[in-house]
Image (cartoon, rainbow, N blue to C red; front, side, top):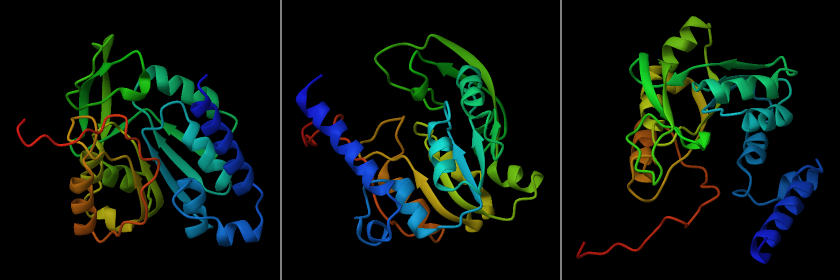
Length: 230
């Protein structure tokens, strides 16, 4: 393990110890922008309805449950192997509700390529170095129809991380998007199929009445300077 990785992990553990102390001084003075779950807890202490779109094996759902133990967490994960792990990891927590669904703007059955690293499965045309190892038919649902079918009048927090398909999923909320209070979405700063570009997301969110609060966990691994001659 390189010393930089070790130091980063040590700092992360230290940060977690601080924010998990539950002390009022920490809540009042700890800087925003380092941990989105902790920040959203400070902005909305009593969230009741949370959506985890792209739940994978349940790590974020579990963290959200730890911060919001009284909330109902509605989690979408369409891929069978990931959903099986999700169910196993969350089965002891009754207020986490798992659905083997993808979110999108056009409901129906679609085929998704599967990769050896399950976190990069996507409905976009991926440009990965390694080819897919298989494919699976999955069910896509619109968020507005899902909310109507489950008699949900609002969503307090919606987290969405689905490898470039975020805008399609949010468009599937239709006019119901005005009933969502906070949205946390994965974005990118470089044009590629599997990352929703920041400017596209920002334009869409502003058009629907949202205001940017913060940007978290920026990675520079895949960023490169623009070459005007390319």
